[in-house]
Length: 541
Ligand code: FAD
Image (cartoon, rainbow, N blue to C red; front, side, top):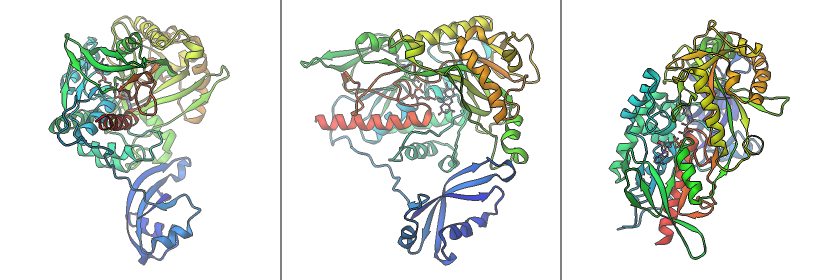
């Protein structure tokens, strides 16, 4: 098989246009083409009048070596790589060691658990939150009734932070072993739509994610894995070896139980603040890391579709349009769009009382009226929170608490129109764009709950983005805030063996440890952590 990338066809091409296009591109007679499958489909909308579909296809042709030799210098023509996932280890026959423990049932923990279960290690998965159906009720409690459950919410519980999300499934991490493919295939087995295997920018949406995590749970349990819900890990029990290094001995759980454990995957996500504090207190190596702060911005989806696709707006293949923007400002700050959710809604995403945090979600159909995305400013420990490993958490809490007050101290989000934000005046009324955040929005002055440098940078970036995407900076566009949970404020640094720098057999992984950003990269990191655990267990035998 040969993989041909960068094959461009017009948006409305006929079904039978692909075969001739392949033959023309490879300069072969049609008789040599035995078949093909689409590996990936994206689009190139740089010219709105002539949008192209961009394919990567796996092609079966007679005398493939001849074509590969002829295109030896062409990076778009290569042998199809072997993408099959192979387990690097298996639990030894009759293995009766301590079962590995995974803390966190987000994408990272679920995939660490799944791979360990598939290798025969019967993991125990602990999560402080509830199973997904119960968690959904608690999450809606905040959105509908302004009642937050600090242990069961958008951040905590089965499925992790991305369960109530747009379910975007792409990432920019290098993936030479095609672990992302393994994740997508497991998602499809768990009920995800098959198109995620070939769409360049696949997404699942909230509703399907809920049923998928339930299905993954059944698979893991059928393989001997075990879940424990509402089981927050409160302390690590560590022992010091003769050489002075720390090692894991067990876990003190919510309710007072002690769980003996010698291999622990720590997949707690970016909002596990009390856990980060505990790790720091126990002496596990942890560092402050960069993240971003800003707001959610909402436009009518129709404006974005028109700006991106012109006369092809709402074309069934293109679907609802997304965007990606970035600007480097005069004050040396970078402003960029983050986690864009076409046809979705802004959600209340706090996990702590007395704080307001925004984020975005959508359903698979992406059919809601507004598009939303984060409009955020990159920040880093050296400039913005130099006071130590946990200072990024204090920084987040400070602005989230100010947002709570600015919103009216009832979990409403503070909001402002772009027109008023640019004119440096508080908003007192909405324009033509209605914000989607629930339980509600209080129109006010967002500069009261954002650092001055971020406000300055956003005021510079908005008109720049408006020149790149028509009506992005329209006066009626609405912003709500604050967006602080863009990634983890800490890194729980690990070595090449995936173990904590100073604590053996503790495997920090996923977004909370600072090694992933998004569902797919967190799941990939979970697979790698599981492989490292398996390697350690089998080596020690
Ligand atoms: P998490 O998903 O955060 O999971 C961590 C788990 O650990 C949680 O379930 C938590 O309850 C548990 N936990 C924490 N501390 C403890 C403890 N002490 N004891 C026991 N359990 C504990 N990413 C995308 O790629 N696409 C999107 O469309 C997208 N949209 C998003 C929308 C929203 C509203 C949010 C909040 C996030 C979104 N993300 C999206 C980001 C994505 O969800 C995260 O990157 C991803 O979930 C990180 O996975 P993780 O497994 O590392 O951590």
